[in-house]
Length: 191
Image 1 (cartoon, rainbow, N blue to C red):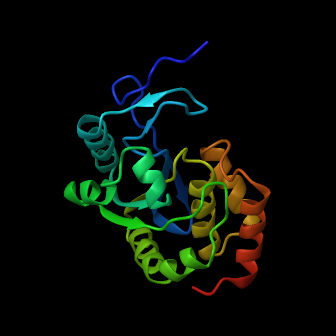
Image 2 (cartoon, rainbow, N blue to C red):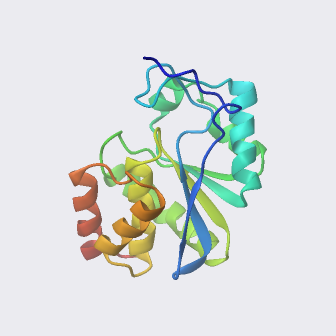
Image 3 (cartoon, rainbow, N blue to C red):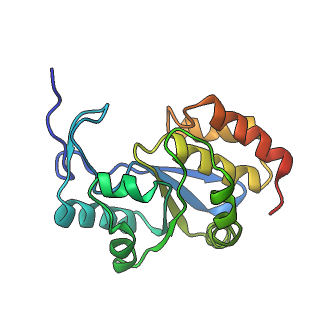
């Protein structure tokens, strides 16, 4: 039996926030704001770009966030009807970072190259008490991986970071590659 089509009115954006002893800010995790995805595993999402993306971005700002991190590739943003996410996010006052990671994968060298600069700004925002929202398509795999990485960068163990993220966002960090990446990252971290 098909699910009813979901919009921002019927299914408002849910942001799961993680707090940590390592910084005074919060890490928010969610699915792609404004997405249109007629055949999603969770049912059809038919969000209107003008109404729903604006409403979702407003929900992010209203939750106290100052920064939005998008972990999707440009083709995915286009596929979900939110290719102008960055312009829209910046238009409501969010700092926006596009740090693409292929769906289902762990961060690779292109991500790390960009993270050297953007990661410093994100960590500073968290230390300064700001909230940062991370999203990918479904808000679990890539999103949870980066949230755990931020904890590891502050001194947490990989196992504890994964457990903390999953306690707030069940199902996060979806693949063994993502888990192994976090264990590897702990051993190679240089921030």
